[in-house]
Image (cartoon, rainbow, N blue to C red; front, side, top):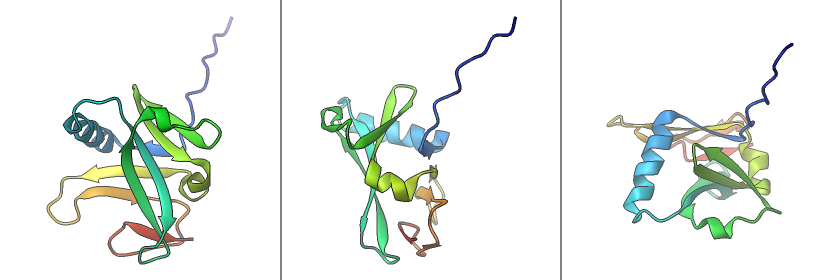
Length: 121
């Protein structure tokens, strides 16, 4: 008899351990409120579209328009329109003195600007 396990949930927004650790630390600095991380895109930036990231109250999650990914109890939310441009995005965090901070590796970006905060398709 073979035992099969359910496949692990596929996540459209990927996070490194460094990014998850840093986001959780920033969340605690917000007063320990129950917050999720919203990731998306908007028009603008050097290359045409820029990344956006902010904490949000989970009550604002709209199941008709948002995808939610769970990281050990911490939720990352992305609206489905943004997900068209971000699916497979790897969010990382670096403590390097030069070039440190959040880094976006987007497999859908045809071009990125030098600052790494905007992209074009």
